[in-house]
Length: 222
Ligand SMILES: C[S@@+](CC[C@H](N)C(=O)[O-])C[C@H]1O[C@@H](n2cnc3c(N)ncnc32)[C@H](O)[C@@H]1O
Image 1 (cartoon, rainbow, N blue to C red):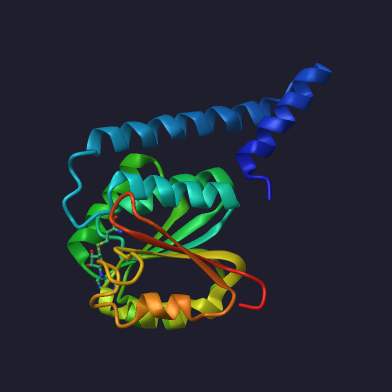
Image 2: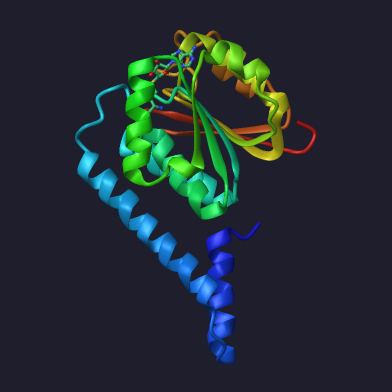
């Protein structure tokens, strides 16, 4: 899939070569650049202010890149907190033309996340819900092509089992504070890493540069 912004750039190039004007595309391009500046400015200014168990920047960047590189558009996050990972994912979705549903159970963090999404200029790409993910994962229809789990660790296996059928083939299931067996990943997660590894047609890798991310792609037949 060609992300919306790349398609616009390609159109601009064709029009430039043929000497035609492209006011709509120019407007979109300008809007995208303005959004990039606003998000970057927000992330730079808030770099040292994430205190609510938020992901480190390197993990946020990784989540962003996974979405952009694979052209994902229908994303779900469990555990919004005050919105750091949500901002990285939604920034990517602004580039692919997608949207994020993110769920948080704590009202104070949920409200702060809403303010942060607004300040970053990303509110229109985010459907933030104040809810218990234990309930909502069963109620959400899906399908999703990108899932990030960063809520209560002892529920990771149940989240995985509930959401795997709602993940599209080619989609990606990621989870935070996870690493391969024997290190920080396995403890308190009720066999989550083993569940990933024992699921046929799921290709899992671990990204260890930050807080630990499992990254699992659903292959055909999965
Ligand atoms: C590690 S923090 C998430 C950090 C966030 N992803 C970020 O980078 O900004 C985990 C969050 O999950 C929330 N949480 C825990 N159990 C939950 C549940 N059952 N439903 C929804 N949210 C839950 C907690 O309140 C907490 O804010």
